[in-house]
Amino acid sequence: MPTSIPVQVAALQFRSMNQARLYYTDILHKYPEGGAVDKQDKSLIHDLMTSSGSPYPTSRSKIQVSRGYFGRKCFISVGDDKVPRYLSITKSLKRCLPPNVNSGRAT
Image (cartoon, rainbow, N blue to C red; front, side, top):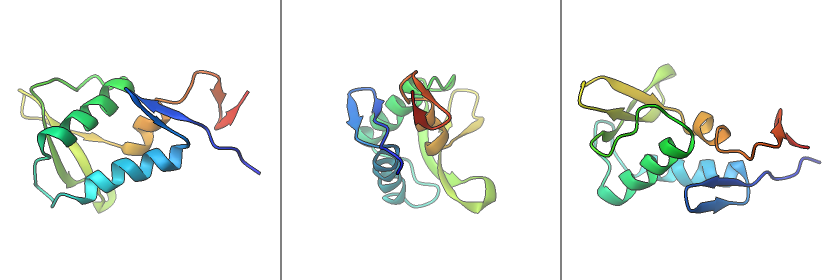
């Protein structure tokens, strides 16, 4: 039986990858497509981007909800260059896993 792998995003600690994914997905579904996220949620998404090592988070970036690849809702970060950069919640969370996790299993 698989065990839960804890995930830490900035100061937030989640018991499992699924718990973290659901937390950020709930934020995503609060906003309509094309809508900008509020200040509090922007801070949470910015923390996710920073913790995952995304090269695009800046404090001035605008975080919005958009349709991404395959027509699914996702967050996008729009910086000073006006180029939207898509944020995958799952990929970002996988980059926040502890370094001893290999292929989804703790060593």
